[in-house]
Amino acid sequence: MNPIKHVAIIMDGNGRWGIAHKGSRNLGHRAGLDTIEEIIQETIKQKINYLTLYTFSTENWKRPKKEIFFLFKLLEKFLIKKLNNLIENNIKIKVIGNRKKLTRKLQKILSNTESKTQNNDSLQINLALNYGSKEELINTIKMINRRHKIINEKNINDSLYTKGIPDPDIMIRTGNTKRLSNFLLWQSAYTEIFFEKKLWPDFKKKDYIKVLNKFRLLQRNFGGI
Image (cartoon, rainbow, N blue to C red; front, top):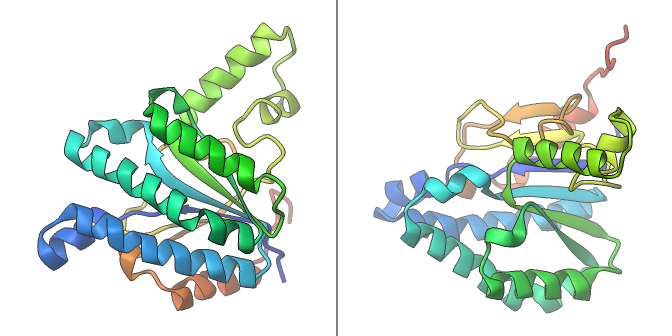
């Protein structure tokens, strides 16, 4: 059976879920937090070391300003409220993405959360926030050039936001959309991808376990026979 070290998730469908239920995209974003907590608990139970959540992409700035404001406030409140819970459950938080465009308040909360959880080792949650894989790769090449190093696979891996983190074994995208949307393009070269029809707030523990079990039974040849 295939071991699982790292699961990455594109949490798609919150807005559509909210509109379908009470006509509010923000309602869907709030409901999505319940699914996040459920998936985190099951990830710990399954003894998976890394969970990367696509929280906000570089393209998401195209959304209405009110929705962006709500999303960031929701994240701020969630991190403040759950900090002690993260510590108690031995969960480490790491942010991957470009923080410069985020508000000072959110940057401070993120830094505090990372600092307070940096020694935890039960599960590392990577929050992909203002993250775009193309931007990451461009910045990586620039960094390698500044250091006067050769461009090879090792130096690229060592310059990514995900330095030191194993590549995802599994990527899950909910919401019945079949694309990667600029998420971990380099890191997902040999990732098994599962596209789920359910919207993120409807994606439950049993759905997650089903994906994990499917992966464990796959034959993975990595280009061989």
